[in-house]
Amino acid sequence: MPRIRLPFDPITRAALLWVQRWGNGSQAVPMATATSVMRVQQLLLTDYDATCARHGLSFARYEALVLLAFSREGRLGMTKIGERLMVHPTSATNIVQRLHAQGFVDRVPNPVDGRGSLAVITPAGLAAMEAATADLTGTRFGLAMLTGEEHEQLFTILRKIRLANGDFVDEPVSADSAPLRERPSRRS
Image (cartoon, rainbow, N blue to C red; front, top):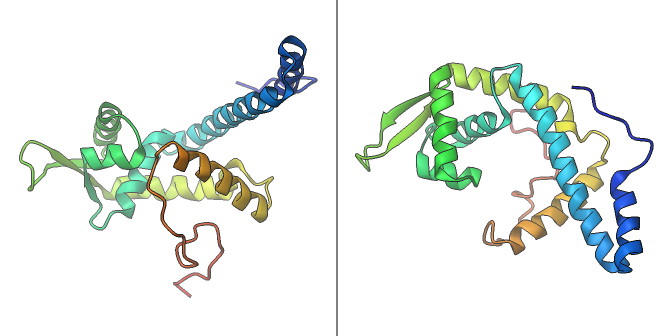
């Protein structure tokens, strides 16, 4: 579906109307910021889902495959998948069931917990994930209009919000673990 290009910014208009109605500009700015974040999330997720769909994936299933590929053995328990993706356990189970039906993961009994199962990425899942990654990075995740400095600023601001909401425990970021600093490839 093509995007509608409005002749004005509806979020800026809403902020102006907010001030007219309630006379509180200091509250209009956080409302406009929050609304902008939600709109950008919609735009990006729509693009990510369309890109991943070319490889038989949704963005949520792509994220699960990346998570499995990042794990030491290419396998994780359902609880761990839900925790790391920050989704409800039922959503994690649904994602893994869909990936299993596609042949992108296998489900094997968890040797530690006989009641649970592990999701294990398959060669087909790895290939789909790598192809989707190439496409997503080729578009710079839909954020090519931002400079490197703007990426760092935005990441820092959004991280602050996630931290304040208890997404994770704060830890010092070293030069080696800083995610947004360009480092030479270790393959060179």
